[in-house]
Image (tube, rainbow, N blue to C red; front, side):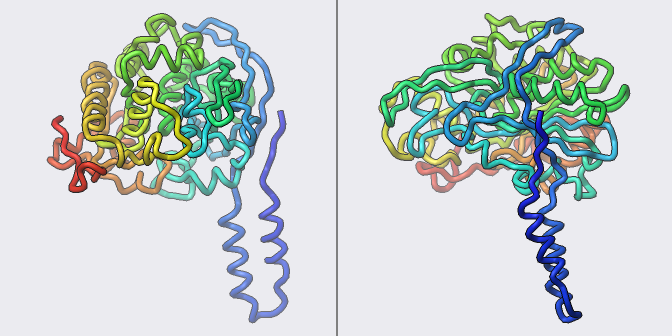
Length: 434
């Protein structure tokens, strides 16, 4: 494995700072030093290679992994990032970035719906782009002292896949094979941590698993593996903006057929590789929570999450075999503002059913449903100011970590305003019954 660090920009800034000559240059020196501090990154990048991991306990298996991005230009080599804290507690963060399961949304001009530019990601880019719970300089951050494993996303498969799939590129009409290896990428990352003294949590140290958008699905799907790899640690999980609303048959047509996700299911929680093709995400959360009653399991979403409504619409349009057009008109804006109100309201109803009715059956599960339509929050500065669920989200998460009375279900509906957003068909705000 190779460790890579971003030093080019830092070298330039250091050179500028060393050029001070006279007292009247103090302002320039301070500016250069401030720039240096802003551009420093505590992350190190590691490029894993093919390997295997033996997981005991309920998993009881040895799995070979082959980490890769999908393989298109600029998205070939997978790497993960680590940040050292002052404790041995570990925060595992799965990055978001959409998904693809068809030629129309795996390729195309302005129609590709997953993050396919892994090679622009760097240690410094991770530092600058992802804040919130990853910002160790914020005194209010409950994870500021923790080690961090940041798992990037470049596979288009929600960190579920281990399969090479051939699609027809609609812009060239040629067959192109993509590597959906998100599960392999997860295994390579967690295997490194579990075998490296500097990063492996000690007995009694805590592990918190989370992810945003696509990463939210990776977090809950792979949580049972993390729990079995670290059986002596407290391990909890929070999904951020991944409510799992899908059309009928999507699970079989996408995750199972295109990504091979059924082969990687943590079957010991009571979900077979066969039943995974039809299970609702809320029921998957319930199975996981019930199997690990000493863990705390949670979800966050906004009530009208625009990007989740957008993807629900993409799923429906692909199922309807919509004709490919070389423009953004195929899917509309990713903020969900062009999704028709009927589809949007179906998403709202199903998201609440998944989270409240299905997942909510487990005594160790809680949710926070915020107002509005903003997508993801845990790696945003807004994490520290959100309170539209009826209390501070920061207080709620601190309550989850401490397992105290602050960790209760929170819902914008309970305070009478979920802040419906404007859409193309409802400029004054979408109206849904829920």
